[in-house]
Amino acid sequence: MEDLPLDQVRTLLAVVDEGTFDAAAALLHVTPSAVSQRVKALEQRTGRVLLMRSKPVRPTESGEVVIRFARQLARLERDARAELGMADDLGPVRLPLAVNADSLATWFLPALTRVPQEPPICFELHREDEGHTTALLREGQVMAAVTSSPDPVAGCSVRALGLARYLPVASPAFVARRLPGGARSEARRLWEAPVIVFDRRDELQDAYVRMLSGGAAGAGSVRHLVPTSEGFRDAVVAGLGWGLVPEPQAEPLLRSGALVELASGRPLDVPLYWQQWKLDSPALATVARVVAEVALEELRPVPPARPDAGPPRSAPPTGR
Image (cartoon, rainbow, N blue to C red; front, side):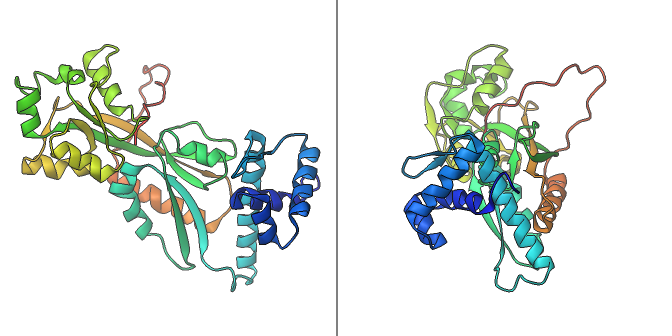
């Protein structure tokens, strides 16, 4: 590509991946001065600042575009070498993927076990909530992501996976202590009760309270932050607060009596999508096919849109 010299593009990628000019120079077997000159030449050619000279360095918004191109170029080069029989020394195919914690804890890892390992694939998972996984795609850090956004990142395709259902639950002791009138009759007062949230960006519980109350109130002022999917579930079972637990995790505990469903028949469904680079990569295509097959089995189907449904609703709240 004449306008973007490949040695300069690869050098920029090395700097971002290694974090410093010195480390990139060691990787490329050149001097730090040569690395700096290549990056400056690429910035002059594009007319953009591509790197923030911090420690570690970070790409600018324009730099992210070039980094994404560099990673796609590396993937195409590897696949071409494999098809030409030049792949003996390449090692496993590396696939960086972004996925939210609840999908990891329920259906996504079993999906990866179904991916054929001939040739071997090395999965590199980045955990991020489904409302922010597209940022990793945009930055070029991952090749595909499970996301709640139906709007494709530039250079990516998108397909619907299904609905992840969350059930509002609490322990029987918590209900007796904080909702003495019974779970159903007190469901609209959940904003007064202690609540479990995944992290400070977890808005699922707030959105659910607003849905029930029809108002602007959020979840309770006592908010316990538990940043793992399994720990979140266990905190609810222990009675620290109520929370929205993924249906596959909640159902066995509801059957055993360890949890009680609040506002029965009023779940919260979060649509999930698969976004990936528009890249002719056999390994990525295989993973996308298997993920879609398992999602069809494990997630709830997206209901067909009614002709009179009007414009689509805004994106769902940030989850986990």
